[in-house]
Image (cartoon, rainbow, N blue to C red; front, side, top):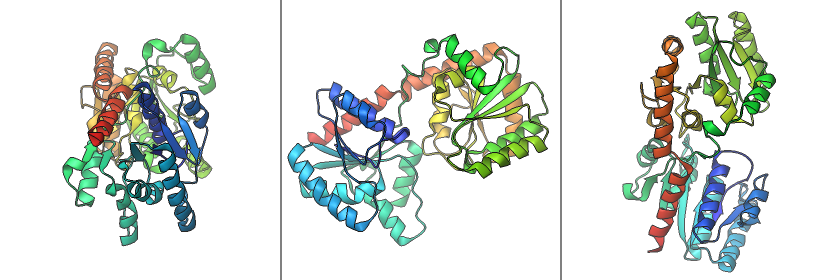
Amino acid sequence: MQVVPELDTGGVEQTVVDVARAVIEAGGRAIVVSKGGRLEGYLKQIGAVVVPLPVHSKNPYVQFKNYYALRSLIRRERPDIVHVRSRAPALSALPAAKAEGVKTVTTYHGIYKAGSGFKRWYNGRMTTADVVIANSDYTRDHVLRAYDLDPAKVIAVPRGVDLKKFDPAAVESARLDKLATAWGIERGDGRTRFLLAGRLTRWKGQTLVIEALRGLGRSDVQLILAGDDQGRSDYTQELRALAAGLGLETQVKIVGHCSDMPAAYTLCDFALAPSLEPEAFGRTAVEPQAMGRPVLAAKHGATAETVEDAVTGWLVTPGDVTAWADALRVAALTSAPARAVMGAAGRARVHERFSMETMCAATLDIYRSLLT
């Protein structure tokens, strides 16, 4: 039984789907408890049991009701494992599972900051499971620094990429034409294109890269910013104004949400992951490698694990405009054959370490270990 706040699109939600499918394919039953969302229908299609419950709520009264509802559900469905994937559901789901004598797992999908004693307690509920999964070595180290835990209890299982979806050979030319038209760019115009994919929010580093592009001083380079501003329209306007003020209107394109990321990476030569704060995992540094694209990533957090410097891309000093301008220059001057070599190395690395199959196999191994 996986317990997750909601089932809309996102890395956590996709991982829930992937693991549910793996459990079913291994001959088990997959139960998902959530307030619901757009992935609910797909889970039902693959044979999972979806139970609606407001486990996203932090309201103490709702939490109280969830605790008893989950105990009743556990008695009825008799799961072997209860796997909790966020802090709010952990408050009710973990005590309910323990009261019913069921083994528990949690996954840290991010880095939880604690600015107060209460917040530390709240975050720490995730560590009370029998096994704690961290989505990277960086996240695992953070958990072990923050809490006095047996290191053997905290296991790093990196998030996995669907290599059937992120397959260069599966992207037809028609998809590229459609996306190029939507973006207002011309395929084959000779420009070197850098793609920064991710929601438009300051810590993702969009302003840093625009300023670095100005320092690069080349007109044959284009920056694509693909991502939803999630209502932060002021920041989007700030980015447009910054590009205009630096004379980069034609070189910086803000294209909004993109639903075809394999095509997006294929249309560009390099991917960027310049986050100003460390990423707990950072799929936008892994997905492009699966598509054979070298990545320029900030040298902190989990991206320092997922990108091999000078082999599958380049690791760059976080927040340093000059360093990023230099890195963009090195990338732009890299020959097509050398890019292809880096791209092949990146795809091989993702196949070896960051595939969905590897993630699911490791997770199922953890489940089995708790039942022996």
